Length: 74
Image 1 (cartoon, rainbow, N blue to C red):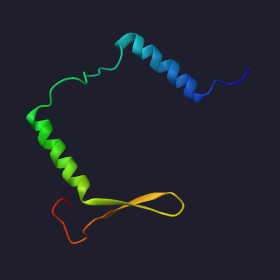
Image 2 (image 1 turned 180 degrees about the horizontal axis):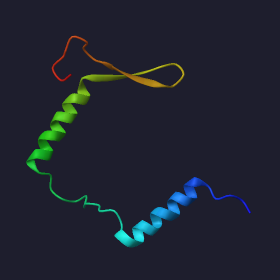
Image 3 (image 1 turned 90 degrees about the horizontal axis):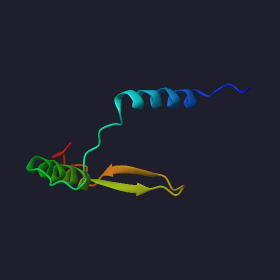
């Protein structure tokens, strides 16, 4: 008989926990954004604008600052 893999044992064990504790909580996706979430989203979008993604010839990518002198969000 083949030895059971760690992954299969882990999934079987967590399945037993789900039976006892129920599924993980997930929130609805159709709720209104709060003002705090709107501000946080705007801040995150501004942070992403300071970076530029460059592509290497091998297809990999890396991120560099658009303006190395701008330290406003870093």
